Structures are given as C-alpha cells and as structure tokens.
Amino acid sequence: MIATQVLDSLRAGSGSSALPREFYTDAEIFNLDLEHIFYREWLLIAYTAELPQPGSALTLQIGAYGVMLARGADGSFRAYINERREARARGRTDMIHPSRRQIRCETVSGCVFVCLAAQPPDFGPTRRQLDLYLFPHRLQEARVAFESTTIEEGNWKLICECAGAASSLKLAGVLLLCHYPTSWSHLLSDQAICIRVLPLAATRTALTVQWLVHRDAVEGVDYDVEDLPQAWHGTSRRQRRIERKSEGGVKYREYEHMSPPLGTDNGARQFLDWYCRRLGRRLASGRMLNPARRSVR
Image (cartoon, rainbow, N blue to C red):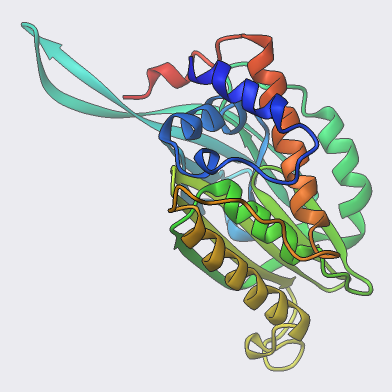
C-alpha cells in the first residue's frame, strides 16, 4: 500500500522542484529508499586513500547494514556486511551469532564502490565513465589530509538537496563529480574535497567531509589544514544554513518545501530529478527486491 501511495505522489509531483513533507520524515518511505535505492545501486562509499596499507579496514553503516571494507595483503579491496543470526533451540532464542557475508566491491581511479544487491547491475558503464573523468586527478595517489563526520538530524534526501544546492557554486578549474545517492566531489588538479552521505534512520544521516591531497604533499609546505579553500568554507557554511532551516521546517505539518534561491538550485533539482525517476521506475516495476536484505535481523 505505501509503495502505491508513494508512486502516485511521485507521479503527481512530476516536474516539481519539491517533495512532500512525509518523504523526509516517514519511516516506511525511508525503508522504500533503502530497499529500492541503497540496497540496489553501486554506492561510492570510500576512497583508496582511506585504506592506504594492506590490512587497513573501515566500517560504515548503511541503513540496516553494517558494512566493513578491508584491503587485503595483495592490495585488493573486499567488502562484507555484518549480519546477526539467531540460534534457536526448543522454540526459543538462545544466542545471536554475528557473521559476515561478502558483497561485491569494485575500485576505479581511486574510488571504492560496493553493491549490497544479490545480483548487482553491470559496473562496466560506471567504470568507463569515471575513468574518463577521474584519471587525470590521480586519486589513487592521494591521502586523507582532513576528515570530519557529523550525524545530521535530517533525512538523507534533505542532506543531499542541501549538498547539491551548495555545490551549485561554480568554481574555476573545479570538476564537480556527483555519484548519487552517496557522493559529491570537488576535484582540482592537486586536491579534492569529497562529501559522503549515508542513511542511518528516517531523520538521521551520517555526513562525512574529506580533503584529499597528493600522498607526497608535505603539510605546512604544500598545504595547510587550517587553510581549506575559502570557496569551500563559504559553500560549507551556506549548506549548514540551508540544512538547519530545512530540518526545522519538515517537523511541522504545515511544511511546504521551498526550493533553494534562484540560480543556486541546479544541484538540488538535479538530485531530486534523479531520485524521483529512480524510485518511481523501481516502484512501477513491481519487483520484490533483494533477497539478501531479508537475511538481516
């Protein structure tokens, strides 16, 4: 029933620059987002610079899944999801055994992707497109100079809209790379500012910002963490203002979603167009998703 209602709402709002309030607050719609987007898409969740050495590992939360990313002794990357399996005896639950299941993982030009689906879509088109644009930036030779993660009290779509609006600021010599639903990157010749958005709950989202520099760059000589590009500082502050205003607004039933100011909303609208097309197409297909999801307890 909820899927039909959401599909009708998406069709009714076709061409609009806004989503209804419940798309940012409703737990059932959030679960649809997970099932039909995050558990099916190739997600850009990390950069090779985050795991520079064999044996390096990191963990991330994507909806109901805890995802572990590890770099093997051979330098290759592998990804796993953490599952909990109940051991039952005589009709009762005795204990819960944690387990890991490997999922598909791909790397391209310094970016690490995972897909949680049992049958992931072909990664070839994504690889070819990203290689074309990212190869000159040599992200595989980068390291992390700065990283900050905050838990935002807002729906993942709201955070993405704000990131898109903030990213609409045009900067000379900057390549803006968006890979929905998780990543925005501002790429220069010798550095990159990368944003990662991961959903935790209907109104909670993990927002990570990273500054990547060449692995041979020397702090205090080639760069200074205190001197992040002024354009980025301005963009970040502006994004914060949009987020705070929007987060407060969606709490009220009288909420009417407002588009970002004229001339700065191309990124937000681009994201919303992608979201509405992707979710609408998946819901219209009527296919049940991802048997892997149902193994999560």
